[in-house]
Amino acid sequence: MGTLMVERLAEADYAQIKPLLVDLHLTEQAHYADHPQLSRFEIEDHLASIPNAFRGENVIFVARDDDGSVIGFCWVVLHDPGTGLEGEVAEVSVAPAHRGHGVGEVLMEQAVRLFRERGVTLGYVWTRPENEAAVRLYRGAGFEPNRQLVMTWYPSEPYRQT
Image (cartoon, rainbow, N blue to C red; front, side, top):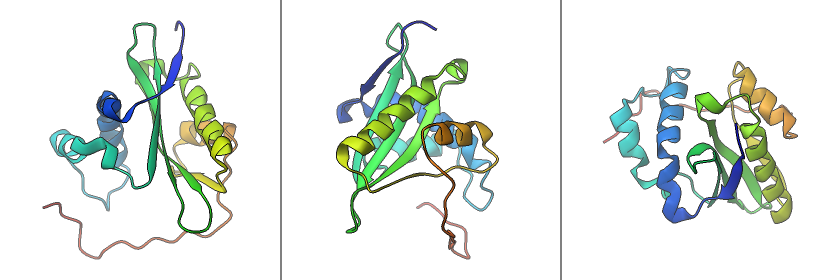
């Protein structure tokens, strides 16, 4: 791998991450049987308005290779629920051909730097415990397993998009 360029993506350019984001959703949904399993087309349609995918201030960092192609991204959402600014690493994805070369680490450094610069009082990221690569990445960036019990509620009827 040559020079790795990392930049904050302008909102008008969010569509540049769509291919990686769609692939991430396709791959991850298989691990959540209680959630609807969407086709590639349904995911692409759902992500038609990428800037509105998460509520709060959306910040997307992208890593590019020598030719300017997006090879990874880290999507951060900042919001204040009334108790101080919180930061969520909402999505991280690195193209398969570029995994294991430090791209994820560089992107997570940008997320943590943003948290520090903005005075985030709580930062978090969600992943599956069996996603060992993600767990290593997040631990390496300073995240720790949650010390709280997190309980979830799911509707008794499966969610259906209209």
